[in-house]
Length: 438
Image (cartoon, rainbow, N blue to C red; front, side, top):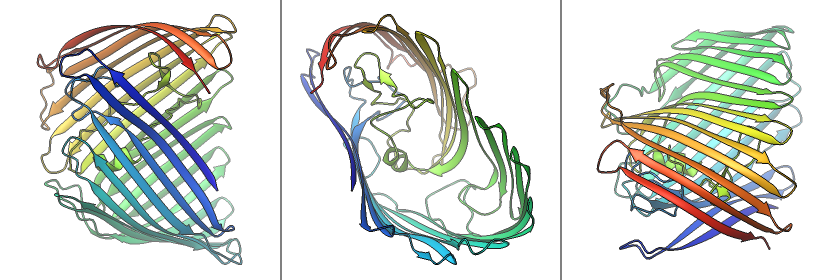
């Protein structure tokens, strides 16, 4: 059995009028148990953290400055699954799942999610003719709000004509049920007929024509660089019309790049269920920490509002890390657009952040960090001249490692929000702290 558990408790005493004492919990836990060797497994996960009730009101990236626009959320999930192997003829995975979500504030309802899924595919004995079948049913049962259902099944048969060229035919059906006043969702049967061509290790092209057509290009000019882009035009599915997805990664000797773009139909509950509370990592796999608290960022300000609507999310993100002999630079750029499927309200977020880390000695480190984010909200006809709400922060921290388990630092931080006068503020913060690890 494997168990990973990280828990933190924040006890915040404040002289701010009407506030006094805050107790905040952060938890990230996951476990995997092998019930029957190589066959039956059970996964479990739980998380507790904080999020903004309305990301377009006063924004803070930690729990110290609490203006009431803050909610605790709690999630739990368990998923038993069976992975059978039938002598090289077929392999599969059959899974049941249950997830629970609740929040202390906001309009996002307490939700119980029940999932059933099955994947069955050809085994190693099939080389020229291969096949695959998949089914998934997700039911969100919400307390005091309309339920949400996502159901789909898909089958695919491929035939390899040559070593580098194969053809395929696939089809399935979609049966979703959620409240919407848009034309994004369309239930029914879909089919695609196409081919896959891999002329070399560096290039793969796959495409198909039907009522759901697509084209995918995968380019790997080196073993350290990979680009993938997909265009779809769907007549059937939760997201119809033109759909784009892509990813990019490159690992150089001193520089790491990672980028992705996605379009999907989702909910606030699903986003927070997947939220990695502890830790957040950069493109190189290093934890991204809040310079003020030396802890991972616990209150991301680019998450959706706590509402019950299903929404279309379009998100682009790019992370770059550059390492030098004694210092490193990390940059992050992101852009999100959310279109809610009942109210048709639209939310746009554009953000940029960067960190410079200088290793002054074996025990001394200097951090300089800045971030900027612009948020626009309203209906689909947002005024292009509206500056929206702009939040930015800058900080300088000097860290000193006294012993292996004892660390001290001093920091100055300035943060500000401009836009709607009801939520404007300015804060200057000085911090001196000692951390001891046991």
